[in-house]
Amino acid sequence: MPSKTSVLVVDDDIRMLRMMRRILELEGFQVMQASDGRSALALFDDEAPALVLLDIMMPGLDGCAVCRRIREFSHTPIIMVTARGNDEQKVEGLDAGADDYVTKPFSARELIARVRAVLRRCHFWEEKPQPAFRLGNLTVDFAAHRVTVGGEEVDVTATEYKILAYLAQNAGRVVTPDNILHSVWGEEYGGESHLVQVNIARLRKKIGDDVKNPRCILTRPGIGYLMPYAQVGLTV
Image (tube, rainbow, N blue to C red; front, side):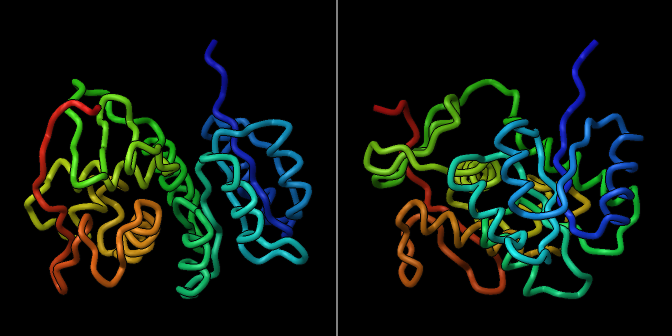
């Protein structure tokens, strides 16, 4: 019998904690829970869950701080739980390294959809390997799912890799934020362009692309993003 996918749920609101646990268990997930940031980090270290649902507003060590700590050593997907209408919280969570967010109050259907969408993104495409893409000193190796700059591997998350790979596979063509959202996050994410903006900014920083004068990920104001066409071939 296949093992259940484990999810760590973190929230200082006991009622919210119980509700999320119940929703996830009914969908067949194995759930562990913590009510504060330090307990969450200890549990994460001991149990290595497949995904973390993390409330952003907690006393002491808040969700963003916990997210940053996890990102120091792990790419495990993290979904931030934020207050409705608080865009600052959403951006802050994404900047801390979260893969997605869900806003309170949410339905069971929405929570499960977000969880499944993030877990899908963590499994790279099962397709025939393609030649690597090279642009200057940047290489995207599709077969190995690796990104290197000047021969040095760049530490990217699953979501960041899929965005960069999508741009590289569409090199020479402007793609809209909705194009990227549909390809990387799924059709249900249409219109949530800030997800793309935050991840693009993070990618540019990681690959050393000058924000004021980028050469790898170009912005076409009011339209979208463009990766210039470059040599495609085997990595060296």
